[in-house]
Image (cartoon, helix red, strand yellow):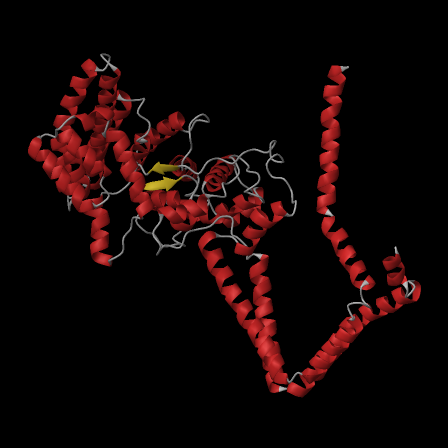
Amino acid sequence: MAGVEAVVAPSRSEKLKGVLNWIWTYLWAIWFFLVVFLIYVLRIPLKLSENMNLVAMFLNTLTPKFYVALTGTSSLISGLILIFEWWYFRKYGTSFIEQVSLNHLSPWLGGSDTSGSGTNQQSPPECKTWRNPLNLFRGSEYNRYTWVTGKDPLTYYDMNQSAQDHQTLFTCDSDSKRPSDEAVMLRAWRERNPQNRIKAAHEALEKSPDCAAALILLAEEESTTIAEAERLFRQALKSADTNFKRSQALQHHSPTHEKIHRRDLNILVYNKRRLAMCMRKLGRTKEAVKIMRDLIKEFPVVSMFQIHENLIEALLEMQYYADVQALLAKYDDISLPKSATICYTAALLKARAVCDKFSPEVASKRGLTTAEMNAVEAIHRAVEFNPHVPKYLLEIKSFILPPEHILKRGDSEAIAYSFFHLPHWKRVEGALQLLQCTWEGTFRMIPSPLEKGHLFYPYPSCTESVDRELLPAFHEVSVYPKKELPFFILFTAGLCTFTALLALLTHQFPEPMGVIAKAFLSSLSAPFSFVLEKIESIVPASLWQQLTRL
């Protein structure tokens, strides 16, 4: 019996809760009818008829100037609301009134409970930022852009993410306990001011001329040319290799030694990768490819630097397409995170096999061959993963310098990929033409990309807000799917236009507009007067007296 009561009790409480929710939902209707009933009952003590006659007399005495002022003020207020709504929509991608209604008024009024209704729905992937594997050098590339244009290509949010990465990769807990170059570099990586960071790096070099972390910082931020950065990276490589071998022999002695070894490993791998990127930029691509291959072979567990994407770009530059295909076979796996480089490179290789003979007119008549179908499907797969890339590859949108961090499937990743890979697409004759003919067909397969995807998870709705933090203000962020104007913006625009038109007509034609306003108000009050007369004919006039006697 106790078990039965335990089962029955929750069901009764749930029923009671459901009844209370239903009552609260329709309480406003009960309250409305109650107010109407009380107004009708109290119409004689409150002298509603006399007051209504006074109101009618007051409206008859109003001049057209009053109506002009009224409609003009309404137009001004609605115009200010329209401007604010438009600004909020451009900045945050949603309506302010709609957000307030959904987040504050709807729960307060007993709206739908969102806490438990979505337990069976698939949670969207987190909008995590990743370090751009092909990021530029601050001193020799980003700063040069600032000197020429006067614009800062990096946002504070992006640089703050880089500062956190540097502290995670190049420091450990024991650095603060040592009054040496490591303690100075710990302070340097935490410093937000570029000049103070460079000053701290020089201070660390005074204490230890072979400080690898200090040389890396100077190569990244102080060097004004790629050749100078390469020289500093080579100088840092000797010290980084020595420190790595020393800590490798001691890594199992204590947890502290293990952390020091992990830090030295990160410094060594980072230094070699950036050195290879310098060689790639200076035209020594074969040397760069050799270093990247050695890094992947020697340190396969270090995946945070995504060296394979640097290697793919370098191999495409050398037109070693078979080697690129072998890399894709290894990294384009279902268990590994995807990227625009992986998806679009796979599409490029499949398009390369058919694009030289591809013709839209011929294909529309005879249909697509198996190879052409595979290429189109690969393009659709890539576009579904990141729909912003084709606009940059087809040069529909203008480029900016890629940020130091990217959001996968976002506009920042599209800029970073297209900035380096557009020459590879142009080198394959007909690849861009095939992309232009087929990329928009992807959207027919995913009519609701935020709710359900075709080959990937639904497109995350947070990409726009994160990309606005990563990309500079002078860049127009690409938004997908294209958002329609919220209802409240259209409503306030219509209200502002309508009231402004009324103000203008009332000012120009006061007498006719006064007649129209009176006719409109009388026709508006006619149904209420009719209902009131019917109620008075049914309900006895002495109802109030009978209620007072009770």
